[in-house]
Image (cartoon, rainbow, N blue to C red; front, side, top):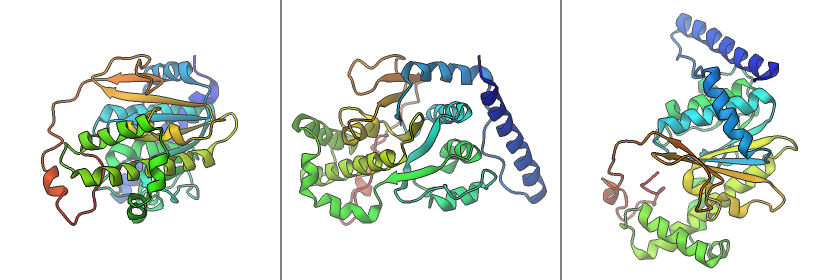
Length: 296
């Protein structure tokens, strides 16, 4: 059964949406981004969280193009905020150093995007706005945590990053970089690109550590590779933090993860087949800074 504070929080989201919708009709502004979620759906998400919590840090590893994963992320934020247990929301989708902490709960989507220096081309706001704005409406800070692009060249040249993972994990990460780039990267780029991946994980881990509050949960929204307990962000978090990682898996099987990469798998419907390698060869043409892996 849901507590009174939780129900009041859901009611406040409804009220905020109604107010913003009225304003949007009057001023032709964008529609409210906070999507309404049924009590039944939130109860299921609450039950899933009960298996994992308490924790200082909760990592949600998504497939970036899976709409159901973005919905689950908003549900988690809604449940934790409604209980008063949400410390902060941390994003791979925005660079470290940016935050919505100075925004008011009634701030607009545009103000939130501005505060986060949002790159809509890389990360469609329609996908992430609902989760971000649910936190903003609850008065919870949303923090960018990704490695800024300006720091990538230095990371690619930083050999000390090669020692941040155990040997087998480093080799596994390097192989994932090959596969994630459809085996199109020159072998000379595998080590530099792996260093970027590790630097991203370290940057996210540092942001999470700084946001931890006793008795509350910091939630990270990231790709599933960053949430991987064996290879990703958990490898760089303080040992005294209680960390739980969830793999959001399209077409997967619900339950504990036998591989040990995640504490739990939350399954969603399978997605249509898609060729993620199409066009990647052109993107990796000489002279271009390599980006994120082709596969989510």
